[in-house]
Length: 335
View 1 (cartoon, rainbow, N blue to C red):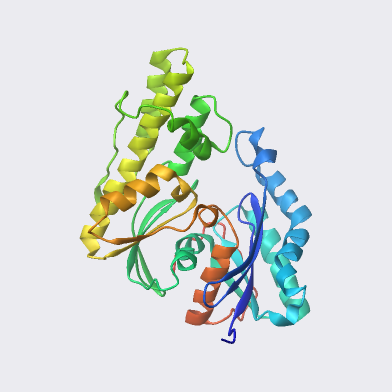
View 2: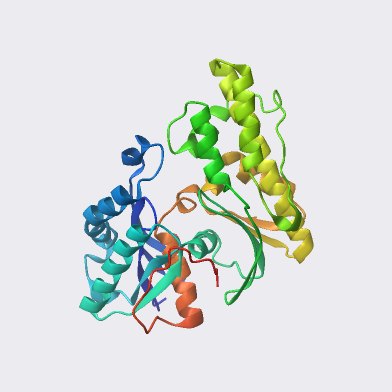
């Protein structure tokens, strides 16, 4: 079958320099990610100026690698999709400027994409038959959002975090336990060997589908303080207790949103959606209530394939952008 649309997608919103080729049937022909995690680990988090500089150094090579399946033949592309927000302003500027230069030099059209919509529509890569409406739980280092995705042009934010995002809470608890950055995968690894029921931690369920992880984080802080020096077994038990509390809090609100909207489809997206316990618990608790789509872990963490999927949907819904692309570090609207 002839291919109708193929996009080169570029993602530089935070600390991953990524490019991908994605078709309008949500086939990922290439996906290249250059991680900066090792460079930022020494600082315990992302340093914006360092991240932007590393994007500048890497973006040309990453795009070239992503174009390898097409033998660098730009005539086989139909357009370019790029993240325009939310994210770190310097990082977004690198990707958007590079994409606009490529578009101007090649005469190809451009479509700007919301990074968070990209996380949600990575579900199309996992399940190309997925159609709205669905409930989405978007969980990352900067966001914990519950959305009612009625259509590609109509997305309601049901609730969001009132303080720390769940991914940020994972990073901060990891630091309390002496684990390196990024903390999410480290907590997941350590928790596998722990007893999640040894310590009881709160499940901070808020009204109106809201989230608040600051209290849970503080409860862990006091627990660690009161326990004193932790042996390896106790560290694993604390990690397991925290992970279970965070996951159950997310799933309680997700269940409530499914009941509220009457949707029988759910999308779990964002970097924290790569957490093994969250994936298993969401599927178990929603069994019989809703069909759950979760992208494979490599498409949950920041990547450009998800930007390509969102770019395809946005182009089909709204067309390509006709004005110069403007980045928006605080972009919120999913639609």
